[in-house]
Length: 128
Image (tube, rainbow, N blue to C red; front, side, top):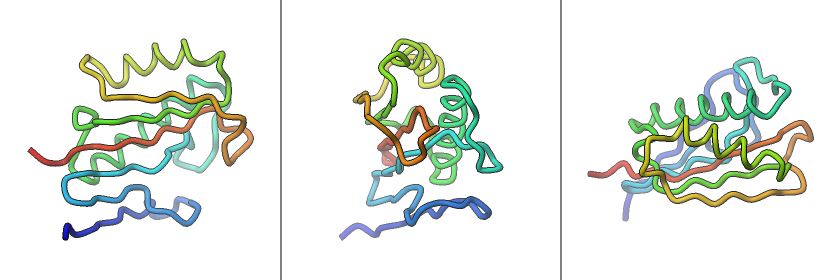
């Protein structure tokens, strides 16, 4: 049976009861990551939130010894369908160059904080 390792939120980050990521064997499951800045504030605007989501995911992956090249699956949750085209452009810049990981994009009615416009969760392979 593969050991399980949990990655807690960084010190000083007020988070709900969850692990930022959980490693099982060679797979790392990253929880839904919102676009909060270092002070726990949620910036206005989709592009700003997307930028912080990407940065926050990079931090979680780095702590586990990975980066975007190790991603195998990404789930993107948006609260506005009108942000899909912008998200695709920003996503290709942040997660590129191809090949990209498998991805699902869903437009949801709401996220936990009413001001959240995006949340991304992902799975990375840490094996060879």
